[in-house]
Image (cartoon, rainbow, N blue to C red; front, side, top):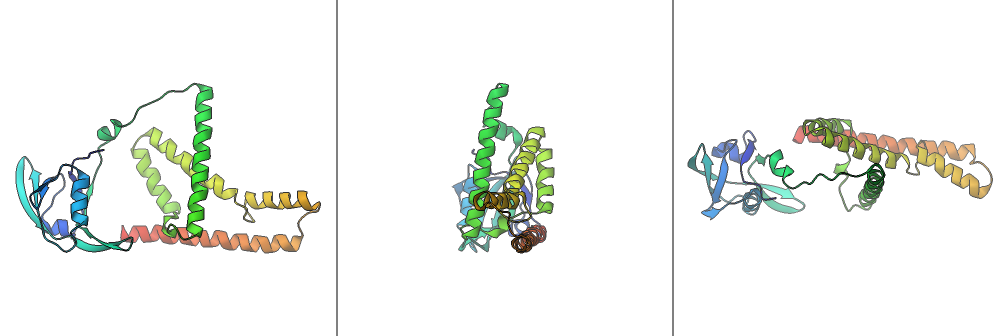
Length: 235
């Protein structure tokens, strides 16, 4: 949606902060180029790292002229500009783009099943892309990040909060069914092997499998906590 370029937050000691930007400033133009939406403003800033920009904002019904120089930031291997502002998308604007649809009990069950299936496939695809290096392992989150997003979703309403809990439950369920020893999926793997071989998995093999499984889980837990702490430090 076309969101007005009204600044919500200015990071302390950022280029925008030092240039005099304030919360609730409405950006009108950059270098005499009209700014109509938030995306217009963001794109102009990103395309001009280390270049001074003349910005006109509306503050308390008065136009104010400011000059800011975006700092250089490397993002996905490219140098882009950043000034340290954030925008808040008002809920009333978001609501305009949503339609509430009601289903019968059977229809709701079918839709829920389809959504669960789609989210499960999506989770598996993301795991595969992490293993192949297509996406970063920084996407792995731990309890700190999950608690943070749980709080944010709760503030957005009961529907959003329940939806967030559903996504977390599906993700945990998918991970639990992976063929990793010590998980339920690992036990299913042993049962399948037993069906085809006609005899139980040797205890020595199960012990080795458990060690591998614990090592993998330990690695994932350490990675998730590291990412959580890194997010807290870097913001």
